[in-house]
Length: 284
Image 1 (cartoon, rainbow, N blue to C red):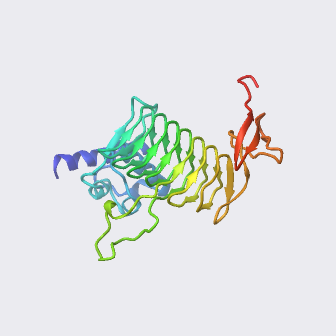
Image 2 (cartoon, helix red, strand yellow):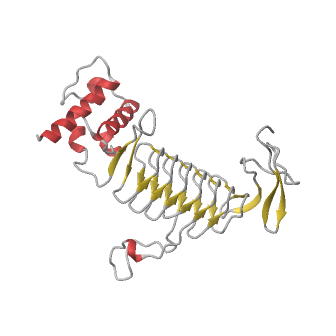
Image 3 (cartoon, helix red, strand yellow):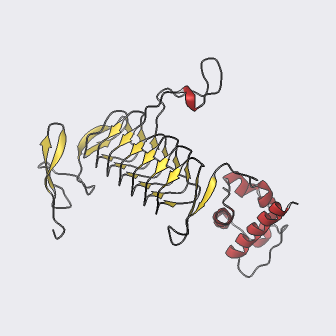
């Protein structure tokens, strides 16, 4: 066993002692003898990820029988660099960004989130567990990206929110191979990136088709499949998505008179868009 392998085993043992205080497991202690249930194993995986910077895939987590076995199943290397953000958050978070990616000050990357080469993420963002920001994406400041959402090449404005499980796509003709049978690479398609405006919200499990523009402060309902542009402040639902109303800057619906149902803001129509007629002051 190499020194690196031994260190990895010690890190797994340290994580195990953290979730089973008072025990003294060895490298070959059977997890069943420690009474680890599925929740304990998940806690162990998260603790190991924090300690090592290595992802613990589901099959690895379920198949490993002992600390040494778990350590042996972890990848020896990873092309992404771990981001320990001790200077940015308390407690520190752990995520990943590739060598050519950029992540702004104060941005928090949770477990297994990844920012790919060529992607840019602004300041004070939150990237949830398992989220992925693909090459060519530009994420503004104070954006929230929910757990397990995927953003491929999109331009996302400041203060937008992409809820858990959402898909923001860029390839209008997805194929695994070229017509001559060669595996496709990044150079083999024409990008049609999505644009998401300032303050817009993409609901949980929604799908945004390549090339679509979602206007500022629009709201895409959960599970919607958006195939065409959404105007600023527009509310769309369904598959395919249709506009059913308007929403305020605060996220609540407007009534028939274009008044917010939750705050003092009112709006007026300006063609196919909305224009704010009254903006409440700080004491309103």
